[in-house]
Length: 161
Image: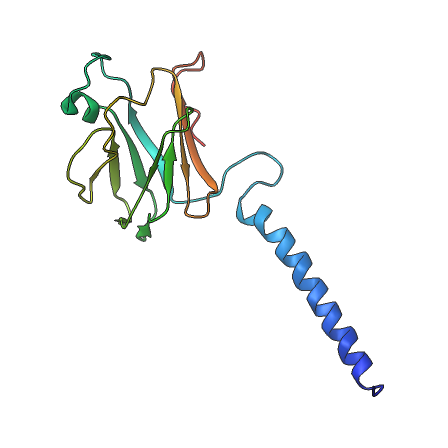
């Protein structure tokens, strides 16, 4: 080997190491965590929640659709929600498919059945899932938590991150 290749290899190794250090630091910064447990900063957040209808044992589609979680885009630009998920504490999960949420708009995720629109989507469930004391968790298409909303505990409604 020629001696001129050694400095090139050193430079390449140095650049590669720098890229790895930069990449390792990126997730914590991008997530907005900084060691304080905060979630990924996103314009998409959980808004209002209408949980558990008064007629808890009423499994009619009307009663199921009285239960919903609102997902809001607080930003100015549209966001493709494809792959985003909304879950409760028991692990029930709704996955968004093919919905672009315009800036400043929201969509209600209803529990029952219905026809999806740009303002209302349906989980097609046959029983209520949002309890009087529960937590909704919104994750992006990579599975990163971007917002949570808890209600019904002593703290009342509002662990809104």
